[in-house]
Each structure stands twice: as structure tokens, then as C-alpha cells.
Length: 125
Ligand SMILES: [Zn+2]
Image 1 (cartoon, rainbow, N blue to C red):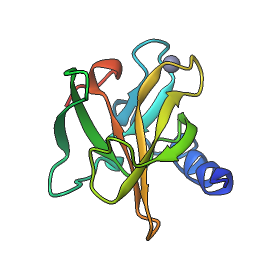
Image 2: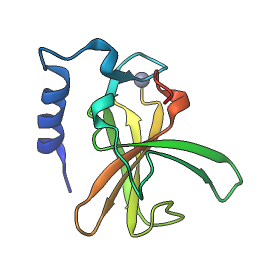
Image 3: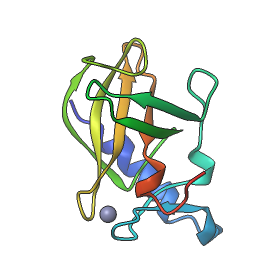
Image 4: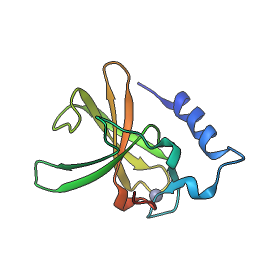
């Protein structure tokens, strides 16, 4: 399974756009690599911002994005402890410093999104 061609297209559209305002980028807080942008913010189950508790009791705040071209998707897709019903998740890491930024979700109808952790990004809304 590879999503690299699509990822590359989105990557080019995001990072080579001439009229993109720098403030629209959302970067990795650890290394400043641009990860996504404000115009990729989206709603899943009618909310952009979600709060979840993992099986160990750790609270996670995540925000949803349609794309995160600055991230790398890692690991096998799994539905284990999945926060979003009918989706499978994989890890999403910064492609520059490998910091974990959140998760990538995809379902059987090829709907997909990223749920990213605001506290590890340069923009927290
Ligand atoms: Zn980084």
C-alpha cells in the first residue's frame, strides 16, 4: 500500500504555492518543518477539535486535517482502540525530525484525515 504519489501532489500544492501566506502554515514545534496549513483544517463527526482518553488514561487533544504533507505515515493500519468509528489508524510523524505529531485515519471507502496533536505544532487552535 502506497499513498506516495498522492502525497507528493499535495506536498507540491502546499509548499510550492506562490501566493501562500507564511502564517497559514502549521509547523512541527520541535524542528519548524511545515506540516500542514490552516486551509487543511476539517471537521470529522462535526468537530474539528476532539478530546480522547487512551486505554492508559492519558488525555489527548487532536485537531483534524484533510492533509499533512510534512508528515510521514508509519506502521500497520489497525482498528485497535480506534477513536473514530469504522476507521483504521497509523502513526503520523514529522518527516524531518520524526517527532510523533498524531495519527492518520482511513476507512473502507477511502475517506481519510489526519488527527494532529496541537501541543506539538506551532499553531494551537
Ligand atoms: Zn519535526
